Length: 501
Image (cartoon, rainbow, N blue to C red; front, side, top):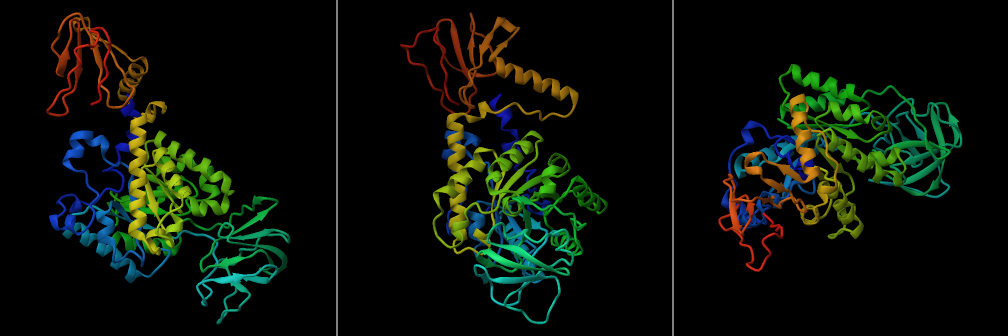
């Protein structure tokens, strides 16, 4: 009943980021538990809550300079997936990070999966070769060009694509990183654009560009491939290093996923899962086909916010998560979950609410990006993520929120669909008629763990353990623990009882 609706959330531990065979066995040594706080469930908690009490939301951490030495602590703290962003750093650094994760799995007994994230083809400000950031002052004049020069100019920004100005008109807005700084196009000089800063801010290396006209994104098809030459080289590198998942950036349609899957299949690498990153208008237009073709989805809210008005992001996120649950595909909610913890040791209350909302929507995983890669407090950020997800899952179970979810179709074969529909109907009716001994059982499902209460004119034999009997009613519960609760003697014999398993 209610358990069926949670299948998309609770049935993906092995499918979501499956570890290779070399890392599927082994226990964490006792010394690992002594070194820090382990994200484990005690025997007492298992006896009290059962496996329903275990955290189901997976935690993904982006590996970067800030957490390279803290990887053992992150693994102990609940990191289930280590994400290596191939947009930043070089081959040697990426290789060292992946091998450290594999060492933890082999020597410490952890089971942390490896995910690589491709760069994709996108319009970027090239590395300006000077300071880490450049300040754009109000009303200052800037030149955006694709021409390369030997030295940096203080008012010139280099763009990584030659035809970036095609289709752009004087008066259009050029937005940096979704609003970090805004310019207005004042003149077109060949393929270059002269712009005036209308909203001052910082220009970072590899900042993303977008053009807006009359409040709408200027959509242009540059013909850029989803997988560039660099991306294919990065994928080969990841395969060599034994990655478990590939996050494909700027997916346009299902064909992008299918082409990569075909490539992996020809090399007998079907075990590598492909996660489609939803981060552009094109991916939103072809969302269902992309989800169906991929092994999972990542809601990349940072890049998506560059092309979509910010106020639409929450509704889009919820729609994507719901579609993934409907199609039985795992989904990761990513980007800026705890952004303030890049600099501060505690998150804002709004950020905690954002994390909790993603868990409430039954996202299969939530991800740290800059918080763990370059942040000052990667371990604290992970602990906040873990605590918020555990508390929301606990509250959801207590309030039995899953009973309000629609019944999703998970079966594919016709016989399975028939069986699934019968079970769904039985849950909705709440009544089960049994031919044996004319038993009528009333299925009380006020909570997911509540047992069925059986009414019968005579004591019958069932493969369940009776907890207690009254004159003409038997209350049964599946025996999960060594002790059985008993009914108060003052209870009316015909009053139905409900007991929590």
